[in-house]
Image (cartoon, rainbow, N blue to C red):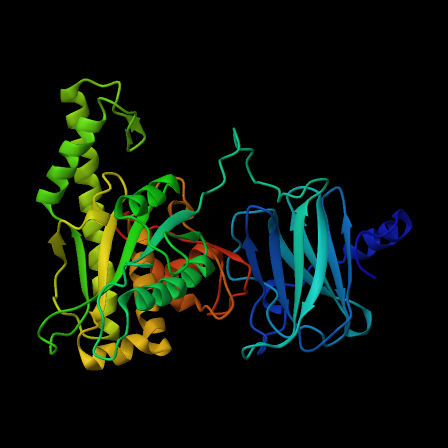
Length: 443
């Protein structure tokens, strides 16, 4: 029997639940099942109880005071029913007491009336059976907050990554010794990178071209700006007369290129509305417009360099790099004054060995994964305001580990455990973790 029962059963259960809780040393049964866990998201609170095996259970709620009651048969509990730490949320305590015949009653003390839903999780990843209880505020779809917040905060927005496959259509780009065309290689890698970005929590990809057609260089910039991209990544495959040249390179805009573009924007702002960094330039005087554009460009160049360094570092972990530092050049696609931008030469298509690699799906996937890791590292450290990265929350996806998440956000596993009331490395897909700020207050 599940859900909220009728008043008759609630009356009978009320008397039963008043059985005194067992002494602290006797609560729960230590075992391979681990300890109970409690996690809190914006929508609900989840309680996970370790079981010895697949088991029936009864769940109902009681009021005055509000609590949730779970009855389990004899031998069903496999671990400690006391979580190491309760995160701030609707659950204020977990009690347990033996019942007739070896059965066990578990009581979740809650701070306000809740709706309860339960289901079983089958063994997985070395963990046994678990009973999951999800709690939401009674009468709403939201979990009960400890304190009533003033106006509800805006939902965290997704960061946008504009991915630009170089060349296309009548512009094939460079050709390798075996006839491999740059435009085909860049599109293949871009598609793989876009798929990875779209699977990443809090990110979305926008392609400047999705097929074999030509897109003008300024049009590529315009697509990124129209999508309100937080980062622009242009993919290419270098060629050089010396076929022994090899390795990846990463470029950002040079100061000279920035200066020439600033002059162009300021000239255009007299005849057409131009917006840079959210500010219209057409209604500003020439001096103010110049200052605003200069500030925007400087911030964009700084962010571009930081993101490019992160990507270059990751490319160096999967293959050879042609230069160990980020290069600067006047590439047209990098000239957006308010979108951090980089151009990646993934390899030398003129090098026979690297041409073979560029044609390989495995190599394309390695490059895409490395670029994604660099992008992710940049957004973790320099999170745009209002995004999920700035909110410091992470929704667990299948296959992730606590240590991997801690490494991604540059916090210790122990701090991650304490912030979320966790013990060990056991986490569940779909749960949302609170990410504490790194030591020193950086994000």
